[in-house]
Amino acid sequence: MTGAGADPEAGPAREFVVEADGGSRGNPGPAGYGAVVLDAATGETLAEAAEYLGVVTNNVAEYRGLVAGLRAARELDPDATVRVRMDSKLVVEQMSGRWKIKHPDMKPLAAEAARVFPPGRVTYEWIPRAENKHADRLANEAMDAGARGERWSPSTSTADLDTGRSAGGRTATDGGARAGSGTGAGTGAASAARTGAPGAARPPAEPTVPAEPTMPAEPTTPAEPTAPGATGSAADPTAAPGASASDTAGTRGAEADAGPPAARGDATGTPGPAGGRGAGAVEGQAAVGGARSASGGSAVRGGAGAAGPAGPEAGPRPDAASQAAAGSGAPGSAGSSTTSQAAASADVRAARTVASPGWGPPDMGAPATFVLLRHGETPLTPQKRFSGSGGSDPSLSAAGREQAEKVAASLARRGTVQAIVASPLARTRETAGIVAARLGLEVAVEDGLRETDFGAWEGLTFGEVRERYPDDLNAWLSSPDAEPTGGGESFAATGARVAATRDRLVAAYAGRTVLLVSHVTPIKTFVRLALGAPPESLFRMELSAASLSAVAYYADGGASVRLFNDTSHLR
Image (cartoon, one colour):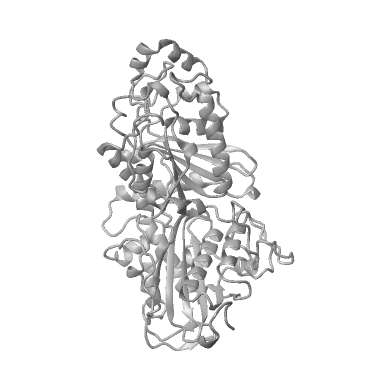
């Protein structure tokens, strides 16, 4: 069988076997996927892919592995036919069209998988977990790397060797799908320690029972249109929730701008305009973050092409004991201190807390979670000057860049962030770029996240504004409809803008965790709107430079503030 548009003289299309798996240590918990592409005729390993996903469910990780495996196969030959083999009964039955897809998190993933190859070119087969060891090893390697705050690297992977699939001399079995040359003989026990005992990485899977308790599967119900064979709708924001992130890859490393003014009560230790405390660093709970790669780590083997994108080298491989510790959820490598292990463990607990479904009914699915990051300091921040969207747009200071690096390291350790969206101002784009470089993500720019325009007050201290424009300042402090001198933006206008931005982003990133890099007034407004608090509450919140807050938005329209002004990562 040849693919559409294939050269008739080129012979029959190649046939690949894709084996994929995903696991979650907690369900939801720190998760990862693995996928391998095999030559169906020889059983040779052609490509591998693995990625740490942060905190997601077991089923989401399995679907992510499927998508990665299909994409790796398509890169090798877009005209190929593919036989997918997985130990997830749920994914196999849903993608085969025999079970209905009910869970909102699964629908866009299933539609994404169905679009990789034309309908009819992919078949699905369930296999026992014992026959899916290669993909399982890769998934565990990715989770182990994530526990160490690293990205999976094909150069340090031993999954191919551990399962007896090295580059040479193998005998194809089961129609060429399984290779067994014995090259990995004697490595089974050691590999179990290195990869953290894959069989224990996830809750035990029964072939006939879905692993996700909140996602009932109906074997006798016809599949929905988003099941395999459906093309999906490009206009559906849930079909490709992160699509906008790829449009602004060039925003990394851009100039950054200045910090918010004392007048909003956001300068450390400075009285706010309404007599409230300034935005001194208030230590909050540990925040969430993420280490989601834009493409995941992948490697093409056997001369099939150049190596695919891969994360930074993980360095020397830890010994078996430390790898086993990572496999069981304990962070760090050999020789890591008890303090660092405890800190990483706290990071994971905090991430799971923010990612948990809260009090909402389970059938609502995962919320859209906005992790709100205020940019790092600029030269104007310690001077406590108004710095909005109508001023000089300064870059980060040296202290601000250091803050951004610290928050990036913290987010990489903790997991969950799947996309990054930033205000168009320089200070937020630079902060976002530093974080994105660490997480392997791109940055999308959203104008609605910009700071308020403070008109003629830009660059002035609160005292200077009171001296020069006392009546205008008093009006501004008394009414959200009052504008700063010179036609700046009122808090009411900022609130309307942020609310519209919130609605767009919730629709675009349904069920996902997104880092929004913004400013004091917009972040406080997100929190105020989630709480249903009055506009004057803006003057009663403290928000430090490079602090993290989090708000979750549910399908029924409800919102939950999960975190506010966390600066623990800066200590």
